[in-house]
Image 1: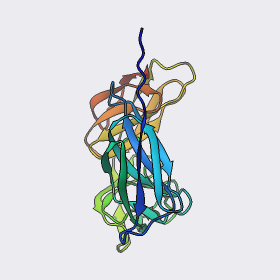
Image 2 (image 1 turned 30 degrees about the horizontal axis):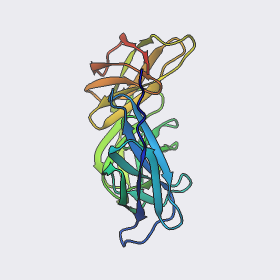
Image 3 (image 1 turned 180 degrees about the vertical axis):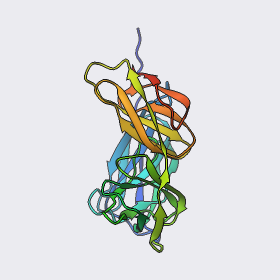
Image 4 (image 1 turned 135 degrees about the vertical axis):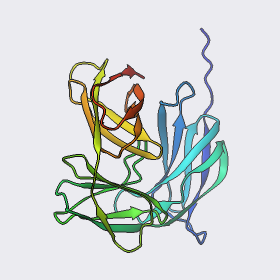
Length: 254
């Protein structure tokens, strides 16, 4: 058997603000997809140096989707979204903007409630707890509209608001009654827990299985979802309605 090794290439560029000045913090991340399956994804990350420059790789030649990755502690900058390039490339410019905050209150409160910003497939997004009065503050957000999802932490109540603009007046929100998807993942080694996600368009909610494989993805808005295993296993179910129980998902090791 002959194995031909491909030579990796690099993507290089600069992170700047809206005025074109270098931003010397954070990093740049590339989302990579294995060619044999759209369920197999990986990431390559490169730091930004004091001159705002980055060198990411080696990666396989071809299309690469870049994101700005804010500094972990007190992020001050947020990217403008995806930057699609073809590797190799040496002149990429990634534009970032100062982050803003989103404040609000859910009437009725929930001491275990969690507010999430743009929860997407494979990426739970920024989050913040609700206090006893239902107030929350999501910080470090990009200055563009997004999706706000809030769960009450114990039951199936939720809040889901699309096209919310951070940095504007505090929101006053109310709970809605949601539903759960329940089932079991089979094919896992004994005493193994994995993540499972319910995906509908740009919205994603997730849960972890118990060691016996059972799961409950709660606080889902009405609708139909695609279930997908996360981590080192693949598998799922198509077109599952919120409120469904007894779903069986077979796990296959990647």
